[in-house]
Each structure stands twice: as structure tokens, then as C-alpha cells.
Amino acid sequence: MKPGKKKSDEKGAPEVRKPEAKVDYGKAVLSPRGKEIRGIVRIAGKDVKGEVSLRRAVIEVKGVGERYGRIIFDAACSKMGFPLDCMVGELSEDELDRLEEIMKNPASVGIPSFLMNRRKDVDTGQDKQLIATDLVFQNKQDVEREKGMSSWRGYRHVYGKKVRGQRTRTTGRKGMSVGVLRKSLVAKPGAAPAKEEKK
Image (cartoon, rainbow, N blue to C red; front, side, top):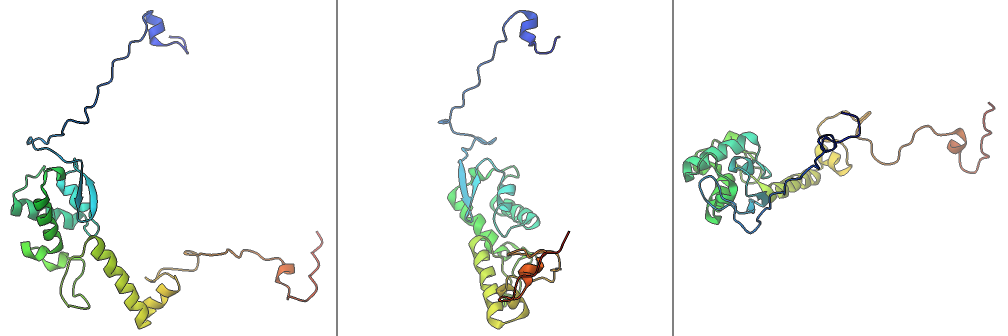
């Protein structure tokens, strides 16, 4: 076949396009079990698409990682009777509330405390799991407490420096870059500007 020629030209018949399949947006999407799936589901302050599996949707929540999310999913399946291939859009509002309660209070379903993200809380001394806005608020409170104590970490937070002992000689530079200054700019104010060096 010569370059620039289409296959339709070679055969002599024009190329016929197949009509695209029309999507019926009014029709409800059904799960493999025949349940209707909602489009957007809000789980612990996070909007998730309804077609996402429950295992994946739990991990989308802030404060829930891969390992903790898998354990929460397994606990929810055994406690509430969800199938393993359940989609988050299949759940009712009551089931979502119960799932959120398990995520906030994992000790109620027998999850050990070493998996929680806030162990031996400074104020209460208890082991807790913080998610979503509670986690963001508590992090801000911790930083403010460090600043108020005038601890080394608080001092670093106040001045916008790196807090966790990283190198700062070459990284983390912010603000105006200095670079190489000319002698004329470095000269004292009021003094005559230095003559430029001859080439």
C-alpha cells in the first residue's frame, strides 16, 4: 500500500463507521447482586464514586492507610455481612454510619491498639484512631502546643525550618536567592561605587 492512501481507497469501497452505542444516563447502574449503585457516596467526609469497591473506598479516607484499611474492611465484612466484592454505592446510609463508627472506634470490633494512629494521647492518655477532619484539627493543635512550649520543634515550626532533622545546607531554601553579588553592589552606602574590573 502506498503511503498516504487509506485502506478504503485500496478496496474501492468507502469506509463505513459503526454507530456509537448510546449511554442511557437515566437508567440505574446495578451491581452483580442486582442492587442499585448510587453515583457519589460520602464516607467519613470524603466523596467517593459508587462503583469503587468498598475495600478501595475505605483507604480513600484521610487517616486510613493500606494496612489499616484492609483490616477495617475485613472487620466490616465479618461484623456487618458485606460480600468481599461489595461496591460502596450499594451501602445504605445506616450501613455507612456503622462503617464510619468502626473506623473511628476500632477497639469495638477487636482491632488491637498498636494499629491506631494516636496512641497514648497527650490529653487523655488513651489510644485513639483519628480520621478526616479530626486528624487535621489534632495535627494543628499539636503544632500549636509545640510552639507554645517553645520547644526546639516549635521553634523550627515558627521560623518555617525543617523540623525532623533533615539537611538544610542545600535543600529547603526559600525566599530571595542571593547568588554572586558584584563588588559595586556590596560597597557601603555613601561610599563611591567601586570601579569595574578591566577585562
